[in-house]
Picture 1 (spheres, rainbow, N blue to C red):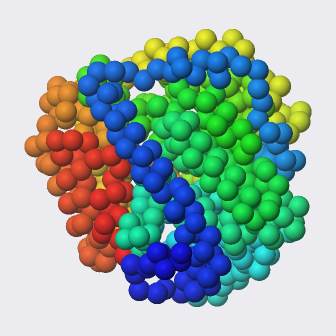
Picture 2 (tube, one colour; picture 1 turned 90 degrees about the vertical axis):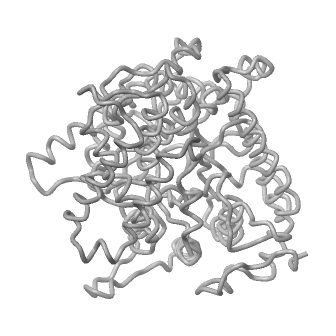
Length: 527
């Protein structure tokens, strides 16, 4: 069976430690059982999108009305998943894992997805870092400063986010077909950590990104059930939080919870990817064009409706409702930092008032500000008692009507500079990057380039009257690339793949058809 698995890469450190004969046997079984269905799910996604491109709009499914209206609940939550007031997220490199575990938060989401560039050695290093974290053997000494980093007592609860279903893992094939990156991430983390986590009195916890439909949630449920049965574990040992970060998924929240009812713990408002998905899903609809991304905040009606509907749906079924990301980085300038923290507090207060049970931050320096809302204002561990029954009637129209706002030249130029810098870093192996005071991941670059593509396609004009065309974008790209080159310096520009990033950003933004994910063509350039 394991001979059907083959590596398509030179061996890297940790490969032998992770890919033991026992693991390979388990993973080969997973591939045989679940890869055919995985391919079918991606094909169904494509056909669903074709119908939307042809004029259909997403809506609630009449055939699953009985699930939405039924009286059922998910499997009761384990104790350590009932208090998730503040979660920090970040990539899985060793130093950042330690810093995140030591932050003043309840949970740390170790990210193999949008804040991780999926290089082969980076992914395997990350798995080993999490193995060491679970075994309380994680430490790091900075080779430049000599500073030692160690995990403090009572670290944050560790949750691993796997890649989305769309991204293959080209370095490992099953019967000459690249395996799904998500399945490999799950299997490695589960197999190498389930025993020690059970010995510690906890379970194996995951975040699942970019689901679009309950059929995909059911696929994951079957993967979880099979894995629990194979290793003779109690049902519900594996628990997942699903990010509702695609537009199709917001119409499937009851169904996703139902499909994963033995393994679900929460849904999460993945706000940045959700905005990207709104653009991508409705790309052919000229009446669904969004303004500058800086103006598309959670206070806008269509996004606030999404937040409130998620809270209502989760709490009706006994699941937690997690809020979205605060991506700000604290500033060393006191007056500027005061403004940053005020923005964060306003955003988090809105989430708290909507009934969310917890929220995300990207930097430990935001923890105290968010704690003043999600800890100090809570009388218990969560807000499951906030039922928001008035929001059961939120309509498809409320979720689909775009917000008002300007398309500005400054906003377009900022999008270009941010996307360019992020793509260069991603191609260089770094998936979480501080840019202009924000901790950016792939979602920001996706919004930035998709937004401009949408303006070009529907021949929109900027607020100064300039038509957004491919020629205008190419002009702005050349000008903003020159600015970035000046900002980072000639030496840094040459050391990092900025030229490749310029070429990739131009190709995907001027393509006649919207490239589904920039990470797909980008992945072909990674080792």
